[in-house]
Image 1: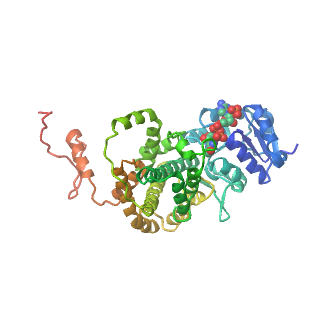
Image 2 (image 1 turned 90 degrees about the vertical axis):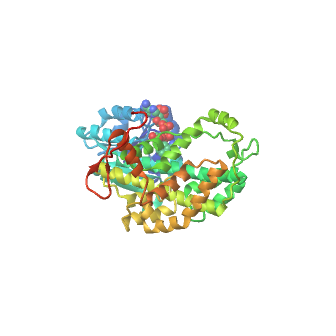
Image 3 (image 1 turned 180 degrees about the horizontal axis):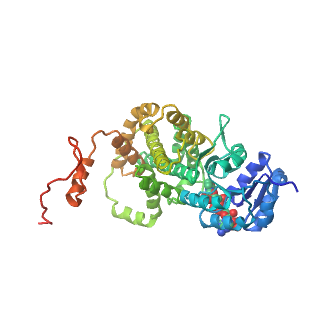
Length: 471
Ligand SMILES: NC(=O)c1ccc[n+]([C@@H]2O[C@H](COP(=O)([O-])OP(=O)(O)OC[C@H]3O[C@@H](n4cnc5c(N)ncnc54)[C@H](OP(=O)(O)O)[C@@H]3O)[C@@H](O)[C@H]2O)c1
């Protein structure tokens, strides 16, 4: 039998769609899965593409059916299953073969796997794949990290299956070790913030303005034709207009308000904290999901605080649109700032402009203004989007609306953990004289941590008086 061009192990939602995408681009794909019956089911449902598939439940036969040097994509549940799969494949691999790990891995696991496989002569690529089921099938955004040599072996197939933006593939080699998975993690962190900000605007529309889901849907649809145009705004309109067949009610009103999370948002927030980068919109979004999960406590607390007075919302729909735009820019600025610091710390030399370009299509956060962000990093060499000329203009025009909406949210009792964080970031980032001088004074008072005085050299200490407690 003719050998396969590439192998793919793991035939759940993502793996099976990715395999069909690869087959559709004219490649022969060897496929396998832990539960053998899923392989048969997959091939039976592959239609015209079945002829491009080389199925094998036996791992030895699966590996042997792939042309050398072999590239084997692993698309299984993140974490231990990936290590177990690598261990099971290893005895069948030969020097020069490579593993392409495509799940939502923690980037530290990718660094470890790279370090473990390299001395054995086995290449390793950790690739972030975004776009969900649809993206995997018709073109995801692919963020590649690992060995450059292995990238050259896999480049053609990965760029062929990736989404295209104006004909340009949304797939790029971003750096060694865990760089690809780190970028995917931060992509998801930004996704969390973006989704949360949209949900906060929906909250104002629903609770502060008394709008129906259908009325909200119409507004989001109209916004999708303007500067907010993006996949997440588009699907928000579609979710809001969906009707439950059984009851005839708006589906969104029946969906339980507890948000799930699989870890990438939390990893982004942790990475930002570890790197010492302010990524408050991402942190706010993760915390909002955690708060959403304690529904029973929220229900009980709402009864206790039933009489807290709130005001009616006075913001206009136009202000909501502008506030969302300004908030989103702050979230992206924070995400890119995390990438920039991680690149510096890990010696990855991450190409921020390229990252913005490969996020323009295929992935969940794809949007119109990523094109502008790519230019800001590539042409203007921006330090932070907040000070990139294109975005300065947008922030100048829209920060007033963000201020109005966050203030309205506070008065209306509508929580704004993300939009509020975005506003505080904007105000904090542009504040030449902050308030950390007081923090430094406090730190020196109780811990002799020292401070710098602006009119002299070297670290200083205060001659602090005793407090009542230390008397
Ligand atoms: N779903 C999405 O929208 C999406 C988007 C982007 C990235 N991802 C990431 O892509 C990866 C795959 O996602 P998914 O939703 O397609 O699948 P999944 O539900 O995360 O995992 C199911 C797959 O993992 C295999 N598996 C589980 N434990 C295993 C073990 N111990 N040894 C070998 N195989 C094992 C399963 O095999 P069996 O059939 O034998 O159970 C099945 O093939 C994950 O890392 C996920 O986070 C998912």
